[in-house]
Length: 207
Image (cartoon, rainbow, N blue to C red; front, side):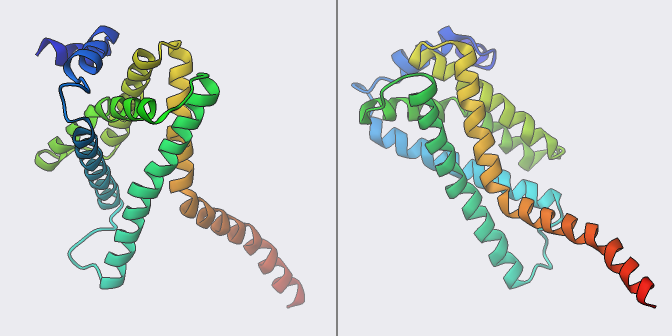
C-alpha cells in the first residue's frame, strides 16, 4: 500500500523499486508479462475511445450498421495506429533527445516500464460505475504522461526535463495523427464557410 501511494506521488524511489526489484527478468516470465500488459493497455485505450465517442453522442441504441462499422474502424485506427505512432515517436525521441542506444533488450525494458507507468488508466474502470465528465479522461492522460516521464527518468537516469519533453512529444504526435482526419474535415468546413459570403455577394451583384 505504501508503494502504491508513493507511485501515485511520483516518487522515483518507488518506481526504481518496482522496475528493478519487484519486476525482475530472471524471476518473472518477462515476455508473457509484456504481452499481457500490452493487451490490457490496448483494451483500456479502446474503452477510453468509446467513452469519448459516447460523450459526443456518436454511440446509441439507434445506430445503423454503417455507423457502427465506421466507429469500429475509427476505434481500431485510434488504438493500434495511434499507439504505433506513439511508440515510434517515443523511441525516436529517446534515441535522439536522450542520446541512448536502443537494443532489443533495452527496448523491451523501456516498453515494460512505459506500460507499467500507465497504471493510471485503471481509473477508467471507475467510469463504468460512476458518471464522470469526459474531461476526466484528459486528466488521466496527463497523469499517465507524468508517470511515464518519471519511469523514463529512473530507467535512463536522464534529466527530468528531457524525459518530460520526450513523453510530451510522443503524446502530441499521437494526438495529431489520430485527429488528422477530423482536423482536415474541420479545415475544409472553415474554408467552405469563408467562401460562402464571397459567393453570395457575387450572386447579388449579378442579380
